[in-house]
Amino acid sequence: MRRTERLAELDGVSRQYLASYVLFNQAVADRLGMHPTDVQCVGLLAQESAPLTTGQVAELTGLTSGSATRLVDRLERAGYVRRERDTQDRRRVLVHVEPAKLAEFASMWADLSEGWDAMFDDYTEKELALLVRHMRRTIELSATQRERLRG
Image (tube, rainbow, N blue to C red; front, side, top):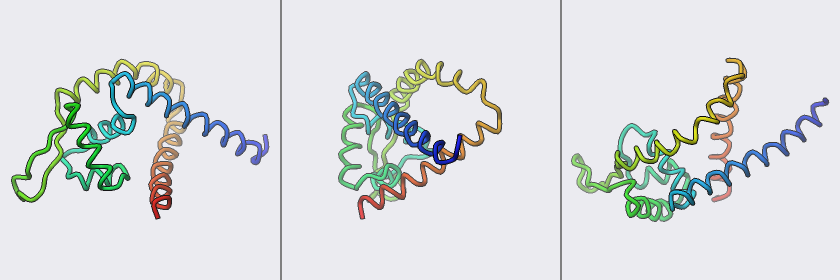
């Protein structure tokens, strides 16, 4: 197959891949009674080693500060996070993930991960490294494009 044909195939498959993930994320959100963005934010917050300010949540998600505030409001109402004054700087409010609610969230993902984990069983180390590299580059490009869209 020629490069132009392979790139055209990649374009089509990429669109299908992204759409399937967006639809999967919507199904997860529906199951949890959440907004799809909120599901992704919980996943991102779970990877953080320390509580964040709402401004840092905005940076992490690429949302505006107002949208990040509304997102944290929804997550707080749903019990996924709580806000607390920073003991070092009382002017700052930190967003803490609720461990019990996060455990429920992780349990749901664990139930869903079985098929995903098995999907990688027949990949070589080199192929896995390529996938990781591609995903990291996609994350970077996505952040750049989000900024461009807001500019």
